[in-house]
Image (tube, rainbow, N blue to C red; front, side, top):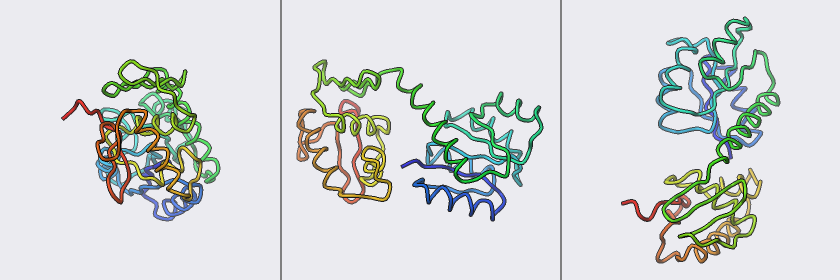
Length: 228
């Protein structure tokens, strides 16, 4: 499930965008001012930001530059400004895409998926290493302490998703959406069973966890067992 931060000062547009993206399976964080949005984006770490340029407290282009100084989160600028020079300056300042108002929820959803697809392809170039665990998304090879792991497709996808969110508690609902493509929930027992299989292959158990730590009533997170 993708978390989208929408920065838009028009309350009617913000409500419409929030409703449209929520109906399409996204979690939406809304903000109507730039500086408040900056703090929330840094704290909440959304997957993508949809940014209006006409904000009441700070120009959106300046906010984009400030955001780029502290984060690599993908940014889609959605604005009424259609001047070619403005578009070029915004893209040069670090925007990943530029949408001119009015736009539909379907168009915005498609652009979000396209931006995230490019980001994930770029991220997949380098293997992820967490302690003695190594994951290579391109070859779909996982190893623990130098030994290859015999993982099913879903086991790899589950471990990869947790690895990209290392140190964060990920809910079972999010895992069902991201790994099993069930954005509106499903049998959490499926997640539990796959986590149990992963623990066995990681050389641990629920009673004696190393990499996979469950947080009762919240979810599970992947950690580096060698880091205090």
